[in-house]
Amino acid sequence: MANLPEDYRLRLGKMGDRYLLINFLTRSYQEFFPEQKNLSHLADTVRQFFCLDTPLWIVEGQQTAIACLWMGSAVDQVTGDRYGHIFLIYVDPQHRRQGIASALIDRAKDWAKSRGQTRIGLQVFINNDNALNLYQNLGFQTRSLLMWKNI
Image 1 (cartoon, rainbow, N blue to C red):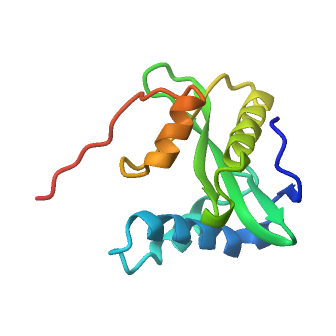
Image 2 (spheres, rainbow, N blue to C red):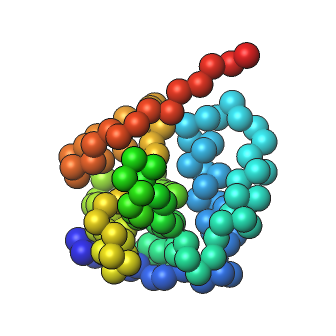
């Protein structure tokens, strides 16, 4: 696993960290969809899916949580193979561009490998240029596109 920068530490989240996960999810969506005022459904998502099979890792800097990785498994509908799916990777804007996200991606790969999985995947919003660049630089490739139309 890539090392975190000095003064940061990674810890496995606990069920009591649910509030942190909701906070990080909310901050992530607020950053890219500021017009969306009601994000209460994110708490419902965490209540429904956060469990022992969907671990959370927290990065702390000076005793403050500044980043997280929330993992799970998904099934490739083309091959039927299970793969590690990144539900959320979030780094506080003040702590970005220091290698924290890359270290979390390495943690995601290690977790997936420990479960016998050979791939990791994620969804990224098309307007998140920094994340898109990071993932492409780390070797991620586009597998599908989610498209929709208002009716």
